[in-house]
Amino acid sequence: MNTNGSFICGCDQGFVLQSDSRSCKIISKSNRVLCLAMKIICFFPVYSDESGIRLMAASGGRLDWMSPTIGTYGRVYLGADMRFITTFDVDNRTDTYFWTDLAANTIYSRHARTANYTKVKKYRQKKNNNNLFFLFLLKLITSGISYVAGLAFDWISRNIYWTDYILEHVEVANMNGTYRRILFHENLTNPWSIAVDPRAGARFLFFTDWGSNPRIERSNLDGQQRTVLVHDGIQMPVGLTLDHIREEVYFTDHHLNFIEVISYSGQNRRKILGNSHFLHGPGSIALFEQYLYWVDTNSNEIRRLNRFQHGFKAQQHERVLSRANVNQIRISHQIYQPLGERTKNKTTFTISIFIRLEINPCQQSRCSQLCLLSPASANGYTCACSTGFILEPDQFTCSKGLSIREK
Image 1: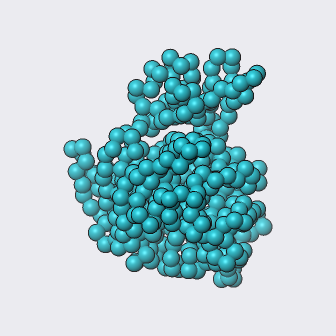
Image 2: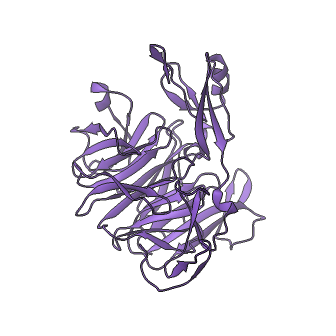
């Protein structure tokens, strides 16, 4: 935030400014006193605890995790029959996992409930902190997919989006697997990574394509206003992640061996790391505080660097984990799925960042099938129909139509 002849740094909800007056760190219990001492108005949602932060990695049929802050390790149980997990995402507020197993050509979900939860059939029992939990594994999508390379969960409207590398399209469905709709199938050859920002003021979908016309695109979450953000100086963009606070897109190029960033609007493109002796075949990518994590497919390592350092220091990155055949990494924490619109209020001595928690616009919708968020709609959403259905003139009701691919 600019001031007369200087500047002041502030942090978004759930973060606290560090002693260098520049860096932001997720709030832990010990940070609460620090907020008051540094004259920063902090808001403490119940999920702001650094012990809940996980760097998750999918390799083979496993989904492992480690804590970047306290160094603990573990594994998420996804069932005994998983063979090759290509992509995954997490609903951090309900501890629900979504993933694809290539061997079964199926999109799954898994969630935990206490013993009195009986709405879906029991999958496996576990002991956790002396409490009995049941794990429920559901097959969401079992047909009409070939190679799901990327998957993203919209935590506000509760929809899932994915790319199909073989079938060459981008698709969306309700989080329970119903009402599937193809958003894009034209001008796609190798669609790969996908990410969403469903907050009010954004409501965007981002995806990469490394085929005959490699590029990074953005559209509204309802598939409208498709825009190319990057199309030059790129060959194989496979890694993609978002900085929701700064509204920036980070991406890797597996062939040209670089990591770059660009704004949501397609401006201010700059290189984070490139031409490094230690950067070979960068793949999946993730963010946590000031750190940027990526998969180095040549060395079978997950590495990280401080993305805000410049010059020689920007080349100083380190190994975090050695793991072969990692297909995707993600940071899992509730603070990385913000529920509100970001606004600022500045006073003379303090910085206050207020978050207006927003209601899911789709909860009030009359859509008979899909409700997709949209920044272009006054209601914040548009109704859509699954493939083979058409939207009636009332713009809410779906009826059976021709079974064709919809643009």
